[in-house]
Image 1 (tube, rainbow, N blue to C red):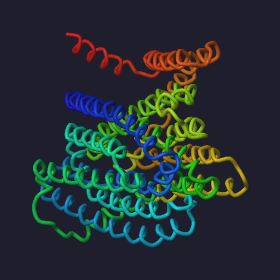
Image 2: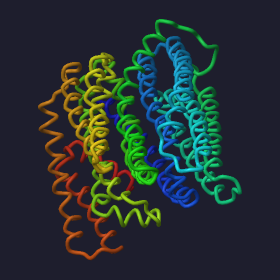
Image 3: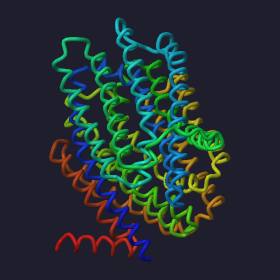
Image 4: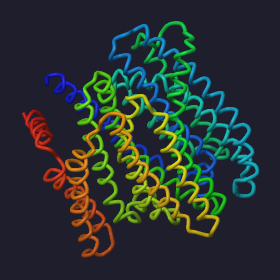
Length: 507
């Protein structure tokens, strides 16, 4: 019990650190997005969103590969085998070099052909689009090379270092946005080059910190062929799952460019930024939770691992709900406050992308449990077949003349079906208690969501459109979610933990 309590305190501390980082980064990021949109204009912003989608792709791939590497590092930390830990890190570096070579080859062949022959780029802007593609490729490769160092920080649960370097990155991106106003050259090209320079500097920061702090990050590289094959296979299956997400986001973004032009890409880019903000709040909580989940499962503490999964699902849902309710009711007004000039269709896309995010992220802690078990091949084969249906249905709908927003509905539906399969897989591999989970976690969450939607709905119906209504809807949404979460969703133990924390801070 003492060990579990210490783990809970560590999770809480790391979560608070990551949320402090996220709040500051969110404020900087919102201001940065407004400046970038104004400096580039809707057309250039749409081009960067379509062509530079490789940067978004890199963050998704790196997150997927980082999970795989972090899983191996965390298991070895739990076992205490320092020599094996060094071999794992060294193998991770070699694995990333192989991934970089593959990405370079694909981008300079298929990616370049797609840009030149298939994409809908405004006349006279193809030269700038080529610069965006090459700089985005460089940014992606640098980010891939940073993954083993990020994974080492997460495995050691050094969230303070992760937070400070991430804040530095956000500040540098703000500086890039401000420099656009001073540039006498093509702003889209300048923006791409400066984002590449930022990625290079952040790569240096991660490398220097990890080499100074962690023993496994120092020393000569070691080539371990069996371990390389094992880790590459594990990461490859993980990347397959992320690849389906790429098809359902960046792939659909490319389809939208072909069928609707860069104006729709600009609106989708705004929606993607809102999704990323909400997703970061969820990810920060899971970053603090996942190492404890993997360690407890590896140590044979399956009941405690199941409890962590239930907590992860619960708070993932509640975090997304906090975004979904106010944005769902007041998306046009909130976007005007944020951006000033709002691209057409952006409000609709923002609402739908949060529904898509909820379907995508809801059962993510179950995926961590499945990865901790290690038997992932069958899961990824079947789940990928389910998820790719979202992209296929979107393509067919666009070809038949459907509106741009329908892709969000198809992709969200695919993720809901995949979530059910994820639940069944967790029961099969890890004896996850599905019945208890449905009664004690899912049912209270759905009741909480339905009741929390009533106060902001009444504000929308009773008040005239304007800033007072927007503020009232936001306040009512947050208050309702907090109140009904306390009354319905939280367990007695979670309430006691929060009361104890509040008393300690009040003294």
